[in-house]
Image (cartoon, rainbow, N blue to C red; front, side, top):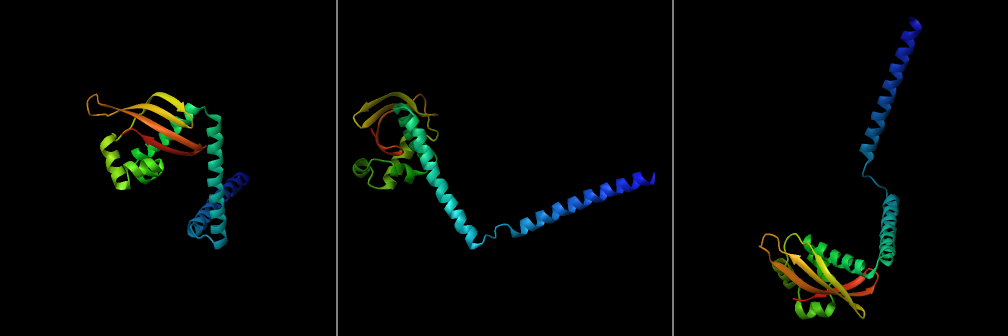
Length: 172
């Protein structure tokens, strides 16, 4: 009986020692968390930069595999996502420069137009997409939820300079 008691006691002591070791390690980690050395910060920034470059390469690779229609829907979808989430500056920066200059000389004018024109939740229905030289014309409809059966009908022009480099303009 004595051997069983010793073996049980040994197992209990081993479990307690493991638990204490785990608690000690967690305390050490939580105490030193957030204390990066200068070298670790530099390495972290380099990794982030590399990751951004890799993300762009991956995006371009994905875009190259898409057909024209899907690419144009993705570009306009990105623009609409910016508008819908209130990131007006990012959306404004996607506008074709001459279009911006002629119709929205300031971001404030653009923001006012967007808030007045589009509903809070934007659902885009693509009626047709046509290519005209280096430009793509998207014929879209956007229902205005909560405003009866009102539908915004717009022609959107996407100029694809290169993969992931594009400008947008639209009928007012």
